[in-house]
Length: 389
Image (cartoon, rainbow, N blue to C red; front, side):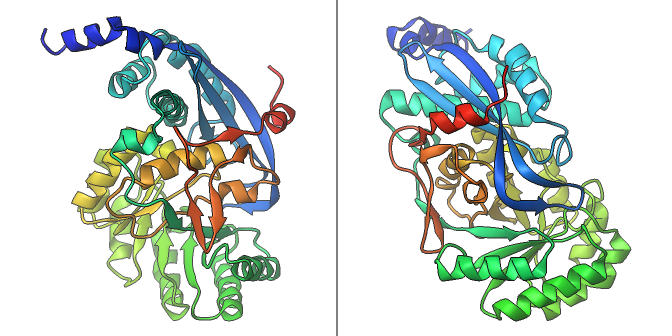
């Protein structure tokens, strides 16, 4: 009983009533990208988002975002399923609840729906934004406080056209936006992929860091055949070369190369991280809200990975400035983020969804300033890109 009573008293207090959740709404947005973006199993020219707005009884509104890649291909969620889960199952269990009871609200969402991680993360992001605004504090302060406010930022080269990618990368370097590049592989045969990668390395020179992401496209045998070529090209990091379920096989591959392996799709839960660590499947973990299902769970994932001896990488799923700001708020509080972040999503959109948000300069992404996530939405653009209800 003693564990329940404090929550009941908080619910009854005037302050917490002011911070109660009045409404939760969602809308699907289709935003065009500046170029096609290819993965091993799909390619996109528009990025799909679900924008979540949480309104508190004090009139403060918070924003969150769920992102997908080409529908339910990267994971099982699509923008359509995310919106349905939010509107039908998740929002109803939170209306009237104090927004700042983050852990209790997460438990309520977990009881209302299994997995649906992107949907839950979008709502929790909006709650942190709203509470931060209400208290005139940055959301990072509610997560332990920032230890950094900018991060080395990776740019993905993913058109599949080496000439275009070389020109794109040179432009990023000249404008002091990016000097770490992740090359998407797996949508061509390995020989063609390595030939394209070799051209990019030769054009950009030895001083540019290059990461490769195979997006689960190879078998163990293929990886054994082609990983030595990555050594010759001075690749810094290899992301998820094998299918997510093949954790033991990934461990065998990791033992055969001196290049760090990063696990991404193979790990969603803390138990997944432990299993990957025990199998030696990777020495780097890609952190994403879409995997963890919320800001607090992503912090826990980082702690578990660190305990398993893994280094940390700030992943992305091409979020707009809204989702990027939520990720950066968490990343800013981590004692270490050894590999920086690839939160470049706002820059791959023809137009971002925010007027004020993350900024990019001196090869780093900088957190927005201000309470909550420090965002100002571009309401006109959001209206123009939103699907009719």
